[in-house]
Length: 209
Image (cartoon, rainbow, N blue to C red; front, side, top):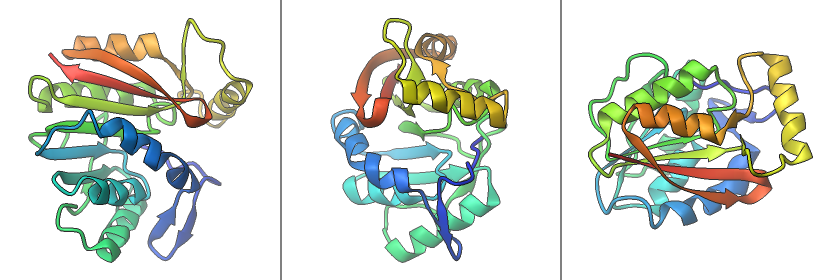
């Protein structure tokens, strides 16, 4: 499940444009470079505009990329970006709600960028359940976004962002890393490491037991 946040993107026809994508995509690629398998199917949950999917398919041409999203408008945007890119390793988008049934039967890695804080907690629990069911032993679950850490003071900007999210929907908000790690463990996903990212974001990496 993903939520399109008003004011964070512009649209041109079916294509949506999320400005944050251009700011974080290369930093994410740098982390993924040493974490992804040498071959296989990468399932992206809550692909949003589809810009990340295109960028990743270009950066990792040896991998097959499967974008997904529950929102029909997002699916149209992904399809439009995919059509323009015409990449052989980028699949047509699938409708997938992280909190519901998943229309995919396997994945060698699962990626989810900027969904956990802009969705109900049930979506994160569904993400963990789905990744735990699909991934092979050692398979990667990669999360990116802002999180709260018990041992690190939260940046003022993140606190303000958290308050604005909860004002929009009380079910949204920044999650504690410890809570996400605990939810993953229930589904057999072991916390591997976290990586500090630009603009007070984190990469969280998990491996299927």
